[in-house]
Every structure is written in C-alpha cells, then in structure tokens.
Image 1: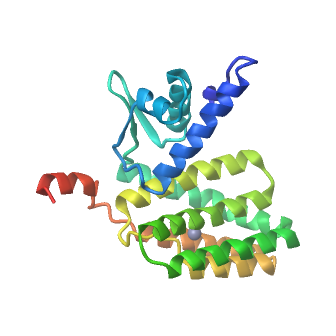
Image 2: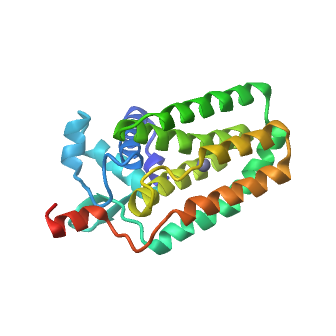
Length: 235
Ligand SMILES: [Zn+2]
C-alpha cells in the first residue's frame, strides 16, 4: 500500500509502476516466472523501459501482496510460500469467500449473470485445449471466476483482498499443486453459478467452502520446488 503513498505529482510514475506490477503479477500467477526467480530492478526497468525507481516501486507493490520476497543485499525474488503460508491463504479464503458468495446472491444483476456465462464459456474453452498456453489461460480464467464474484459485491476493498488471495493461491498451486492444473473444478464453478442465479445464498456459501476445500486437497506439501529437483538430478 505504501507504494501508492507517493507525493502529488508522482501520479504517472505510480501508474507506470502499477502497470509493471500487473504484468509481473500475471507472469507470476500463470507460472511464467517460477517461485524463487530473481527479479532485479535493473532488468525489470530495462524490460519495461522504466527507471530503476519505478521498477523498485513495482516490486515493492508485489512484495506487499506477498508475491515477491525482498532480501537485504540480495534483491527481490518471486516468493516461495511455505506450506504454513499456503494453509493460511486457504484458511483466509474459507473465511472471506462464503460471505462474498452470499452478498453476491443479494446483489447480482442480469448483466452480471451474462458476465458469468461468458466467464464459464471461456473456462470450458481453455479446458478443452491442450498445451501450456491453454493451461495458463485456464488457470487465469479460474481465478477470474472468483474475482468476478467479488466484483458483484461492489466493494473495492474486498475486491483488493480477493485479488491478493487469488494471486497467492495461484502461486501456491504452482508450487504444490498435484494435478498441475488450476485445481479449480469447472463443474463446481457451474454449481456455484447456478446457486447465484437462483439467489440461494446459503447454497452458494456451502458450495464455495466445499470448492476451496477441494482446491486445498489437491495440494501436496511433500513436493517442494520442482525446479530444485530438476537441478539436483540434472534433468
Ligand atoms: Zn474456483
């Protein structure tokens, strides 16, 4: 948050940093930048044609979201969440998302319903495709379903919480996911959407808790960073 606490007049630089933050966040969330990858201010600045100051601000924003870890004298790295942190992310989602689902049932408008339909169509489209590109798009689309739910509530602070939790979840899934997919069941999203459509708050809340449980069940904490294993075995 303090990254946005800049002096008046710093607007464009802050916007620039936020845009770089968004690009980097996407790359972390869809696993193009794996946990532990070094993110040097110099390289980030050069890549996005921005000053080191702006690159540093972008990295700082990601550090506040828990996606980047900063080490003194060593720089910034894509975070490598511990099993304990991973469990805390899902525990937080179990507390927050049933409330979001219930509120969404009360606030949903016909226009939102069609946005959900588009979202679910996109999900099934990516699911039907093969290859890493489709997999990345599917993971992104799965997270977007949860963000859409938060959008319906119309509370920007809550939305920002969810943005952080969804991003952290994707990183955790990248690190510990057993199936290698998003672990967000498309059929469960359909059921949640059905509960929303019938404005059944208690069913929507129950379904979302079950859904989060299933995502967490797919994690295997015995697996550490597979990249480290590859290095060890030189494969
Ligand atoms: Zn999901």
